Length: 458
Ligand code: 5AD
Ligand code: SF4
Image 1 (cartoon, rainbow, N blue to C red):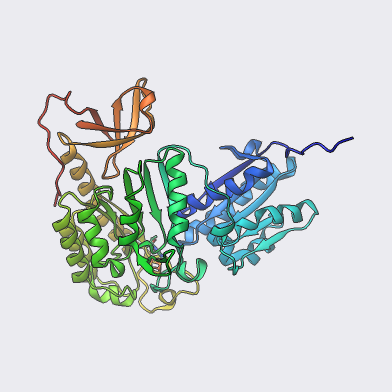
Image 2 (cartoon, helix red, strand yellow):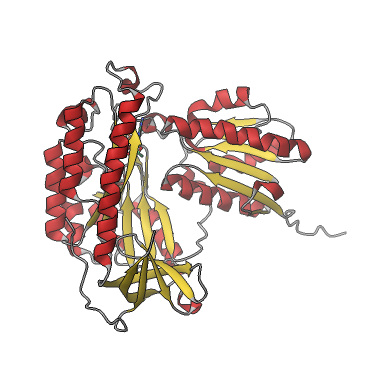
């Protein structure tokens, strides 16, 4: 009898993603690696043959959550045959501990090794548990299958790791040294994504603007130049990048905000603190003044630029005066949105053993005050959009019948009544209402109110 080509048995994988956009990207890539083995994704663990927890290690609560989620999966695994894998930064940092504490976990795979998942699954088939938290010589990017893209907004990882060693942060230990993908590999991936319908690409990296990738002729270019090259791809209407560091905000990159219309006027630029004393203790390598000068230059180039930041309150030694400096900086910049965190000591980082740890109740009071200020700024920013016209990238259907949802240039969610065939396209709209977490809009030219471009709200 002639051998027939084996198609793998249909199986389901449930991937839970914690933490940042890099992990969202990695989760999608893990799904791509597993697809040829017959796995399709499912959005519940209940019918899954395999569950992957793609974890984040940045703050204490994130890793505690992994162990409690594992606890919840255990009874499911008792009921039936299910493979449980832990991936990402907790796997990288605490792989051996996970194996010891959770004997029902089959696979532990770090963020640099998930292209090896098929071999690891073979081991599990042979009744062995598999752990791989190497930083292999080969890069996973060279071995991963071409990404599959659903929808018009795509992520593309161009850089990984961090050499900055902020004293509070585990990333340099979990994600390793800075690595930039070569320009040609990025271009190929971007063209593939656009061919599959992507209109917007967000370039990702822990330190995305530290990007320094080699070109085909062996020269090295930074993020500003890379953005200019990507902007030449036909059909790619929008480019974004995150997360950037003030230290790497060089003149070329800032000029790209002036010169490249595809580069969206929204920038996530974490400052962490507004106090020079604390910035120094954090080993940020920039001052409050440096940050404010960058913001001023960028707004000079692009007056409608909207900003977001990460802030940490209660870093060791932070006094009331230091915190007042943070509040004053936030007031001065005027953010469209922000992520705010209480300092959480991470084992192995220098700040975790510093004297003068700030009491929890003080951290809470400061967090609430900062969150209140940011929430007011966010509301004001959104309210100022009413009456403005801009392009919206339509990404899907809204909650109400006939309604589509999309993204403004400033990353706001926008609802507009339009035909579903328009999903994936870019529509000029005028904002007519402010809803709780979104804006309501109508096609531009049909509104009864004054129009005009949104400008910086300070
Ligand atoms: N405690 C609190 N927040 C932290 N972040 C990173 N490490 C810590 C920590 N130990 C925050 C920073 C960073 C964001 C991704 O997480 O603000 O920019
Ligand atoms: Fe962490 Fe600082 Fe590196 Fe950002 S720049 S990943 S906060 S060490």
